[in-house]
Amino acid sequence: MRILFATGNENKVSEASSILSPLGYHVETLVVNGIKPEFIEPQADGIEAVALSKIEQAREFVKGTQLESSIILVEDSGLFIDSLGGFPGPYSSYVEKTIGLPGILQLMSGEPARGAEFRAVAIVSGEGFTFTGEGISPGEISNEMIGQMGFGYDPIFIPHDGDGRTCGELSPEEKSSISHRAKALKVVSEFLNPPSK
Ligand code: IMP
Image 1 (cartoon, rainbow, N blue to C red):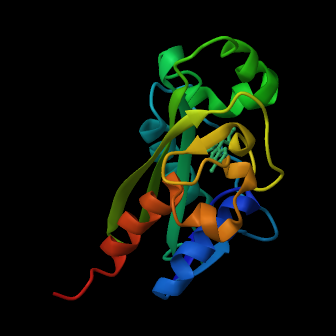
Image 2 (cartoon, rainbow, N blue to C red):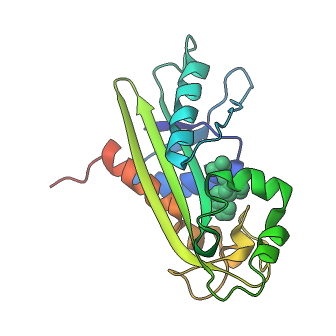
């Protein structure tokens, strides 16, 4: 079954592919006439609202094309830091581009409570259905940036499901076995292809 992932982030496509291909799905980046959709992200209170806006924009993007009846996937995620009241949360992308990871470490400087979580909302939509799956990866913010793997906040996030390394130190396979996105995509895949009873 082919799934078109509407995203400009190829890291996300490879992660989704490594999670969904063993389950029988072929994940590709959504491209129409050589162009990927560029989403206008609403400044919303939650990543659910952002993901819903993305799926509406993606469906509009394929309207009238031969991909109109395809299964489309969107996803929105963010880093929620406990001691910062959930910041940057839905603003994670903007915060990464502005103050960046050094800015987050600066905000957390001297803070002993370092709990945080990555959250992901994945929405899959096809003819006559739209389904939402959520995933959470709990962890801690590290004291420094460690690791070159992954993307985004990976070098400062130590997942509780891991062995003390940051996500920036995990191989793609290791990250896919515990990530927020993997959990959200698993929920979505079970909707598309429920396990037989
Ligand atoms: P978006 O879902 O692409 O809008 O991502 C929101 C922000 O969270 C961006 O700054 C991403 O780099 C970051 N982010 C999303 N998923 C991950 C992840 O798996 N690891 C590290 N950063 C992530």
